[in-house]
Amino acid sequence: MFKRKIFPLLIIFLFTNSLVFAKMMESKKPLAPPKWQRQEKIKRRVRDLSIKLNLTEEQQKKITEILNKSREDIAKILEETSDKIYQIKMQVEQDIEGVLTEEQRKKFNKIQEKEEEDESVLKIFKGY
Image (cartoon, rainbow, N blue to C red; front, side, top):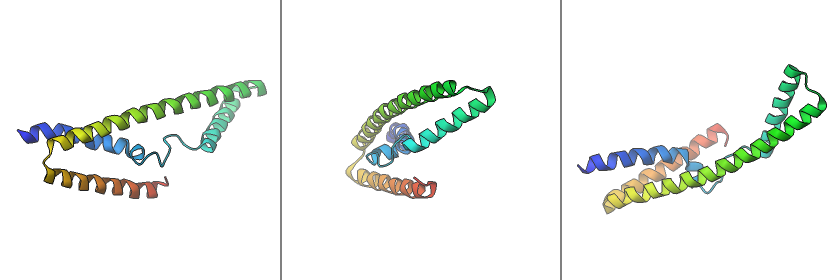
């Protein structure tokens, strides 16, 4: 009976853990790419559209402004969302720990630490 109650919570926890690990590490890696990368993507997009649509200089300028604004809006939403996901993840972790015995909590914390280490190693290989 106990296993049936804890298993869904553990699955949710493990899933959210992988989604918000960067946030859990106090945003050492920002959710959005660096500004220079965003600018490069925008430049490429405008250049591609310009070639395909034969855009004027004025159209290119306006489209660049539109894309810059949309990137800012998206970055803001991503940051707000990541904060909410982080809060939910922390609540799930507390709820799970509340169900566990002291010995289980210790093991659970060790599992958490191991997963965090594994994520850090993956970041190195992915270039974060």
